[in-house]
Length: 389
Image (cartoon, rainbow, N blue to C red; front, side, top):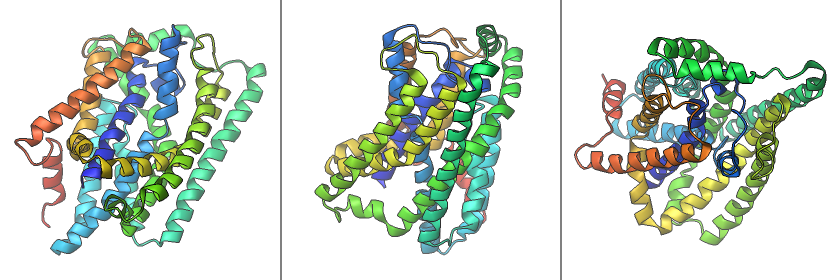
């Protein structure tokens, strides 16, 4: 469905807008905290805007679409008389392998490994009732947000007596030097950073992604996306739901951005770990609310702007290729394997790189589908998944 693929394309833009900072500021991979203070008001506005619009929302959208696609895959298998269980097992196994390779050699913050592992859990819970699925998703999100809120508040209370536990400027520079150094230095950095990032991905992002899986599962069963695109719900009704929801999400995201980056345009704000953890918690609380608003409003837009949907859809049809491709491009740009630009570009320049990569992938996806039916990674991935079915 073009509308779903278009949503994936916009999710790719958001994921790129968040992940790129871990390449531009490699020390973030080991601390999970913000990079060095911004040098100009424009730089700070770029980081503030990325947090406000994308952080904590893009992977929720991508995870929601994963759960939605799970329903689509099962429906196709049922129609063809094939075993979707066997296909799912192969698909999730392949994601685990891809995730391990991606995390170790391209981006330590990889999410594919978590998707593969959690995919097996989703497979086992595929017959869960709608009520139980929504309740489970809500409990997961609430508990994760509460834990981070408490952790952030406790950290803030202890910072005055314990001092900052963040990396010093010198250690930050050491991380950049290792990431942008020789291939051997870079790989040593990757090996050291991967376990640290993996803990966060599996035990923070992972549960939240699974909650979004369940939401996608519920929406897929009810065929809500198809019904919205088909015009079953009036634009007025959808706007009355989507706009207030988006407003609440943006309000929470604004608080999170203020905690992490300070007032828009401010360059002298240096939050402690407690404020950043609290900002992360508020961002996570905003994530599903703001994402829901995005989805409703974008589907309204797509059904009235078919040309826009057609323009966006191809990149989403090969989202796995483009996700991995983003990491490869950023590795070449920022690490010692390539140009070694980590720690050198301004935030405004990094924002320009984001737009350049995304627009290039959008154009290349159109060119690719002029000759092929599936993306370059999707082809062998699908062949493996459908083998023996």
